[in-house]
Length: 272
Image (cartoon, rainbow, N blue to C red; front, side, top):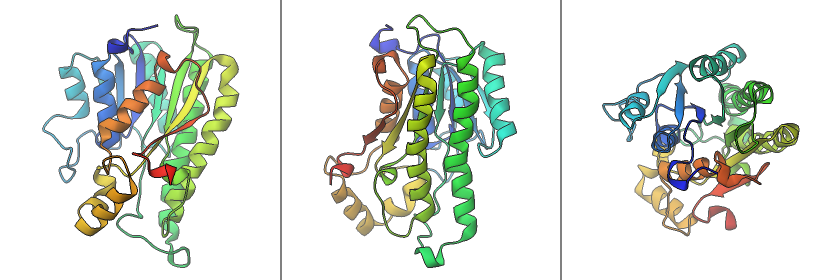
């Protein structure tokens, strides 16, 4: 088993939605743990309106930390682009050990609507990215992992999907996001059963409300922020780094007998 301080040495990981937020934090943490990285997003540069934006792209910062890293543009709702993303990892690094299906969208923070007013286009795009994108990432990553030689631990790979506490419970005016994240948890459980005979771990992380651009509509409003802080009994909103540490655990040999779970990382939100 790898040492805890460099637990991903010589592993190769794809992280989707890596340009900012939880994806960026995960990539930087993986880099510190010796991982080779394929950072993917629809844009390489962190958007300047996002609080985590820095002069360095995720790839550049990973390289500055000593990691081998490349950027591959991919729309996760496109089967052809996701398949090409997996192929790029194998071409660049020889194999794929870890797939982090993190890319996602959320319209409901900025434009919450009850079901009778809910825009069809919001539903279609959210399901395409948040659920179909995870399906495609699982499909093509698993196809590669099943056919490759196991590592020293006997495992062929680790898949970590980004779900949500809203995949465990519901909330008003958020039909597409809640439905997509419930779907991610169901998909994770099924894929875990498919992949278990091949020693491929498949798990999900379920973040609570986390301070990223996706929740900016919440935490920019002091009254709403105070209410949300109160819904998370352990120190209010989480940080991208809180979530990244859970992803690291589920993507490592430390999680040797874990598959098919949705791990809440939510400051106690889901205990209500």
